[in-house]
Length: 400
Image (tube, helix red, strand yellow):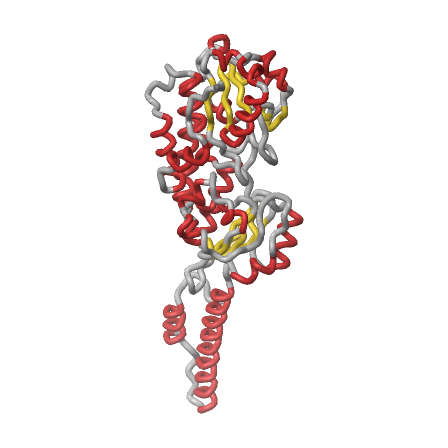
């Protein structure tokens, strides 16, 4: 192989090479054969080098369409090979929200029935309803349902994003459809989790929206820092105690449905009475335990608001015995758990909770304007009024 110099120099050397001079015809013939042989070898070397160069293609080489084949590791630990940027995507098991956050709604070519039939309470769908509502169905969707491989194959997406399949299920779905399946994850708690950040970045990488994905991560981190900085130095003894009831948990529940380490409370370092149970996430509390805790401030999740009010009508004495009710310190929060976490609503709830619990630290915050700012950044539209119409909104409540 010719190495370290160009082929032009190689041919020049051949022309200038001194060969033995022979006066016989045999010598002249031998000289010409030698030159032809050398030239032939050089041509073969050139062709060989060219073919070798053409045969090499890494996982990031660009093809004729401008696509790159890359290998990624999804949130279940699976290694998936995929062509990027993906122009046609579907999202199952609650992954559609994450795709929309990174400007992916235009790339979605099919939607689960649950998303289309029950759009209320999910800002990402409301903001993009004109793009999503009339797309082909890709299956029922929702918890405890199986992906519809046949429908997924019929619309031929470049990738399937999923938040409802584990390793084995994802491998099986990928084998059935022949379409790359990429698992995403909301993490716990599902507001400022690293799993959400990693999922957003992965969607961005695959769809060509890496810049937007990083902007969303940066924005959420900015909100997280702002909420924490406003409240981190407040002494525990100076904090009012708080409780949230009416949280959804595989259905609608009353005041006894609550949460330990409730994300909006955690974001503002609130004194959540439920934390003393040592439990994180959804938990059902005996109603009399709430009386013994007697929180200074009571929040009611709008999802369970109707059930709480119906219970009040049955037993008004119970509710009026709570200090928070006596002092008029009962407030509503907008439900944010609906087919996984509506992250923008959870952040808006945190700012409202902060305003109620620590008014001095949040005196510059108008919760409604802040909510609209968050909705605008995350999903592209100011949606507080629409959310408040369906989910009570940020209000002071009265048991009357």
